[in-house]
Length: 395
Ligand SMILES: [Zn+2]
Image 1 (cartoon, helix red, strand yellow):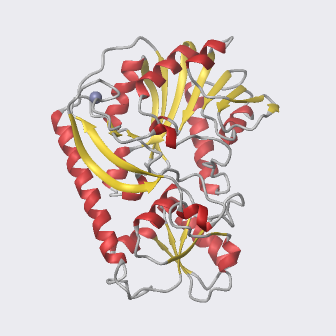
Image 2 (cartoon, helix red, strand yellow):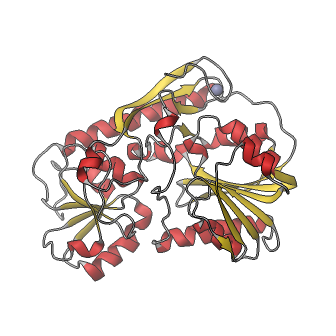
């Protein structure tokens, strides 16, 4: 049932800003067969903005459709760029609080790849996630559980540092979750929070960065107000991952009442959403024109790749390349597009590869040169901006 009240401030004043009528509910779960992929569960992404606090959320989100369990793969350590990103944010945390001998809890730790790096800095680490593998040893302990009120009640000692990466965009009640983090921390404890920046998505008209799994979106302004309301003061902040993510260290303190969003900020976000929707329509129109290179591949079978495969419906994508062996040989939800290993295109003489995320362009271009030197590699932006009808001469 459609939400009619803001889950953050309870206001009934909501304004619709963007909609995809039907998209696969997961971008980090792949199908075993093309048939399974084609019948993947779908949902409506109906983004609405609360005109009081500014929270942007999917009012048609059905959480029961999105159950995180085994098979959910959001890790990207196969990329050198992503590994550097993780080390950089750990350095940011250590600028605020040295990790050695600290008790660190990660809520929604996934397979524990980030937490194992924290353990290497000498911290005692506990991770909680429904899809966590049962690991214990080397200063690392993973629990297969949800981080919720019941888990909090079972904790014997508070955490010195609480880490939460890429989770609050998956929940409709972020303020309640931030308050649980507040309770789980020792006095003066530090929260490290990482989440996509809505400002970046809208500035870049990145319509493929609005997947169903992400039912909640945070502007820089809203996240700052939410943290203050939950009882956190910012200690360090960085727009990481080339500006796509918020990396924020916040210290536990007293909470204040939620402040309303400024009207000009609300109007700005609304108009940016409208431009982003227009970019989606334009890209789709362009991808329907027929004079394009035949063997088009995308690189990266995660959120952006799954969304592009589904949203650019006229584009005949031959496959999505990914270095993660867990993903290779499987199928993209919604379209059944195959996930390939880089080696699979080594003999395709006319392969044209589009790289979805500009941060990986250099790394992928260099990797492709080794494995498939005949392939031509371009940023996806080029396809979206110029498309099939205005294909640049050098393609
Ligand atoms: Zn609100």
